[in-house]
Length: 605
Image (cartoon, rainbow, N blue to C red; front, side, top):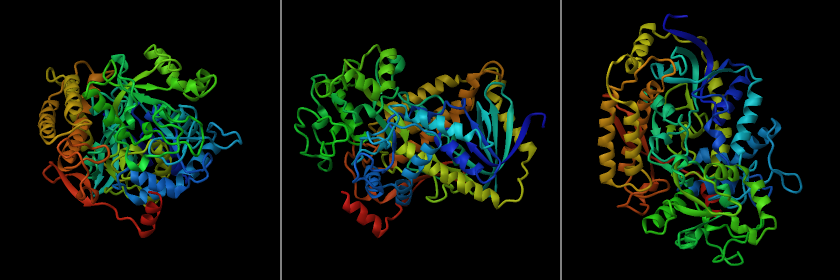
């Protein structure tokens, strides 16, 4: 034990204990590797628990026409064909196996009448595809993975934050961290590292993301020399709570719309029927103008326009608000109570299908969703962009550094389909853990890390505490979030993005002088000061990427370029650290589809 830090050694170090991190840890430990899991918060608090609607997997339990090829085509179409097609193929082929594996480990899913795992409709999916547990699917996933993983000999380090990677050439060899309670420092030596830290929604003012989502993994990888991919694509979930102000941004699951919820404006009109893309139009419902014929599992029922892709629905809600037809508090109305016209005892039905939503609105907003409409509006929800990884192994452009889950880019392209995130965690968490373990097996020993360098980084991290005066880190964070919300949110422009970049660089200068009074024990101001580097890095990467993409596609919308461009479908955006320390942006060709993939997509359009 060093005077200033404690050292731990693991074959594989996992950063993040959500669905992706736990699945990676279980897989790495299954071959006998020593595995350490670091989580910024408490075990069980992972953001995965907020994923409510279900996990997408083409099991065909509700509609036998569904298969991996349809799922693959839906994912590619939803991502506007900027997806890494090889990742999309792996995901579609392997998702069902991962769901069944989770069931074998003890997950309890809702069931069809004949005992199969029940699947529900979700936005952008051609058939009912989401395996679910009411509206608490993510919670069930975490419970199951934790119960299974706890017996695999994993070491957990809770309330610990990683803030630096050590590299030997182009290979990662360790990480430096601190304990959030006591402020003590930890050095982790590792043969392979898996990043599973989630997204960066806390860069925005209105978000469904909890406090941990500050872009830690993306920034750690970027600082170590890894590429970031498609950072301009951020998903704004169309339905977050808007009232009261204290709960603004909290997610309202797409499962509400999957169970028949409809969106209306202040005039009582279902505005989603306007401008429905031809691909989604259907004449099979009894009367689309009156509403969706609500029959669970009916193969002939039209998918309602409320279940178009999330980017489309979010922009439609913003359009209604901008044109003066928004709800009382600046959103739209989401109504599930209307199904009483079609279902006997609809109150019990809603409480059974959407128990969390019922309690969430009852407790936080005083609204009974079985009788009243909800007020909803877009909320920053998910990052399609993140660390660039190999489609098969999940290894980044830095040797020995892997990434999976939301912090890794490629699967979702320009826009993620609801439900694909949970199956993504399982499919690529397994792959990341498997290949990280294989990489570690090829190394005989741990690399030495210079103790002088560790001590220098410790001193640097303590500067906000040691200063006697300086900038308020909370204020810098607040100003950054407002800037990103206003200038880099759902509606973007060249002028706004340039201004945002200038402001971000100004905030970065101020952050160098952040001051957190007190000592390092139980000091949230110090934590905020250290998180600023991550938030500022991902924010600049997002804005630079958005500035160069002069079109609108998926989660990226430019006011002066409202349509997709032909060129825009040919490239992905890469951000990397230049030799002089500046951030550089490059366009790289989209991964080409094989002839077989083209046939599959063509057959399912």
